[in-house]
Image (cartoon, helix red, strand yellow):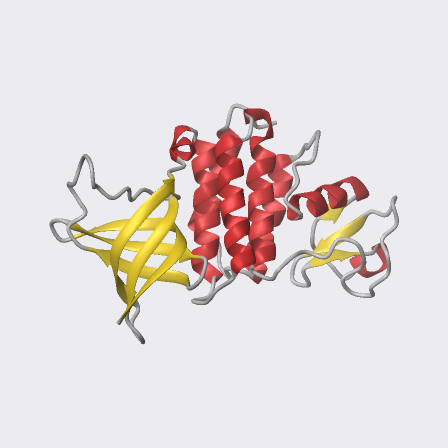
Length: 252
C-alpha cells in the first residue's frame, strides 16, 4: 500500500454504513480511482472534508495494488463549483460529462482529458445563460475528443475528399464523421451543411460559436456520436440532459 497525492475531481459519492462514503474520483495521474472515506459523514466545522460532486482538489489516497477500492486519507478542496447546482442545465451538463468519464476513461494518466474535463466544468459554472447550451455542447465534444473520438468534419470520412464551403454532406455516425454528397447515398445519418460543420468544429475545439441555433439537433448529434463510439449504449445522463435542454428557459 502506497500513499499518493494527485489532483482530482470528485465524480460521485455514495453513503456506506453509518459514517463512511464510497467515492469515485477522476485523477490527473491515475485516472479513475474508487476510494472509501471512513468517518466523513456528519462532520461539520473546521477540519471537515468537503466532498461534493464536481469539487476539485488535492487527493491523498492509500493505493492498494491489484485492488479496485482504495482508502482515502484526505481530500483538500480548492474549487467547490457549487454554482453547478444552482441551475438544472448546468448540473445536467456536468453530470453527462462525469458519466462520459466514468464510461470510458482509463485507470492511467490522461492529462489532456483531465484538463478538458476541468475546463468544461469551469465553463459550465461561469458562462452566461445565453451561452449555456453552447457550453454544454462544447464540454461534451471536448471530453469526447479527449477520449480519442474526435469527429472528422473537414474531409469526407469515406473517400477523404475535401468538403467545400457550400457542400451539404451527411454525418455518417458509425464512421465517425461527415461524408460528401456522393458517399452520402450510402449513409442514413443526418444532413449537415457548412455552417453546422463549422459549429461542430468550433465546439469540439472548446469554443462557443456565436449565434448557435438548433441546439436540440446539435445535442442529438453528439448524443448519438457518444452512443456509437464511446459508451456503446445510451447514457442515462444524456437522456436526462435532453429533457432538461428542451425545458430550459433559454432553449430556442
